[in-house]
Length: 181
Length: 181
Image (cartoon, rainbow over all chains, first blue to last red; front, top):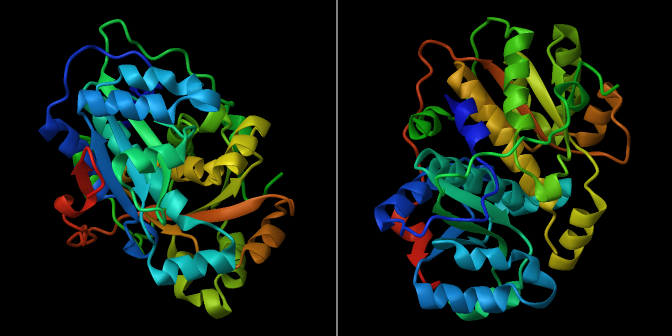
């Protein structure tokens, strides 16, 4: 049941010391691949960093100084660096008129597919938006005209890693019927 | 299995003529409520429009002129108008430094939870980003300083409504290991 999966997913910052097979990582990307996007533009590319030395180097450069709160990513088994690719002209133009960067909505959808798929496969994850983007691009050879808005850290759950109590606004506070109120 | 659900979800623009009980709509919002967001800011409010006359009025005003391609929304059973609420100061400030509007990522995640939950319950949906936002705010009394980036149309699938073939880039095109390539 989807809601079980949603309950199970939580920000995981400690991971078991067990590699994630590449076919499992690809299964997570497959879930993202099927995500909807504005005008079906699919403005994403997933760079899997599972080489240990490269991951260390990337983490050292991406999570230093003001970004060091996310140093935990070094202990993950793989990093999914999500490149925001160019949108289709039509959705970019529409987005400009509406004042909405649809590409970010698309990245949110696709990455959550990836993360829920990882959860189903016993893999913990954490959304990371706070990192030195220039350093990430330099280390991975990502073109300057692309954006990296998100990195996802991945690793098998430790046995003891249970979802903590969920701190969310109550349902009453986030909905209304037929008027804003 | 999550991937079955992801395969089943598709943009649905024709709906069965059967009301969605409010507890079912609330179950969909519950799935969104549990979504992760930057600094746990939960910058969302879901306005359910299931009053028939109000829905007609809203659709007439939101989907006229250059927005009329989305007139199909009038045939949905309920509209989920998603209000992008104010972010926490810390994620807004971080977003400004990074040049990323995290709120949109959050809205993408939460709405896809809602949509996948709807799919599981036999309800078709369509993401709509192209509408007259000012008109929507006027009809529903949404404060001017809020944004409405997304509306989701909802309605039970018609019997014959099967997912069409999925047109997506091949997996090879959207991933790479350890370098951008």
